[in-house]
Amino acid sequence: PASVMFWLEAVEPEEEFIALLDTDMLLRAPLDPTALGATRGRVVSAEYAYLVGTEKPFASRFLEAEAVPLAARCGGFHIFHREDLRRIAPLWIEYTRRVRAFAKAEPDAYMDESFQDWAAKKGTVSAADASVKRSQALWQAEMYGYA
Picture 1 (cartoon, rainbow, N blue to C red):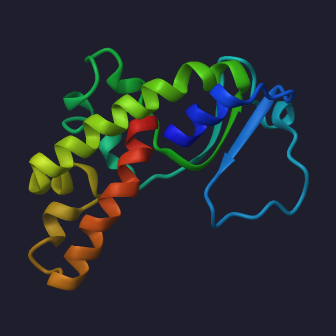
Picture 2: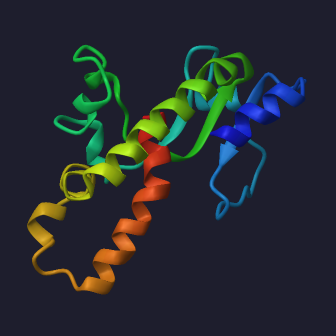
């Protein structure tokens, strides 16, 4: 999210919509943001059903109670109106920082609350797999920062 904010501070995009994609994604055809449902005030994203941290108790650590139901299990790509992205980018950074700080301060609670079925699996996961999952927490924190 920081690179997006710095880019927007340095450049005035002509395009009305901005697509943000994961680095391992390819476009096989042109994107039509409006046909996909993007408007000012409405971002189009992919559903990432495994992001269980968008619910209680995890989301409640970072959001007001009335905002928790608005958190979305999304990632991969986002299509923003440029003005929405300007407004969202600083908040995205702030929430990502909060999620990462929690992950560092309380790694067991972070894993239990934000990784699907982790609490049930952690006793059966090898130390190597657990280490990989904990590393995954860093990039997943950005997804929760946006959600």
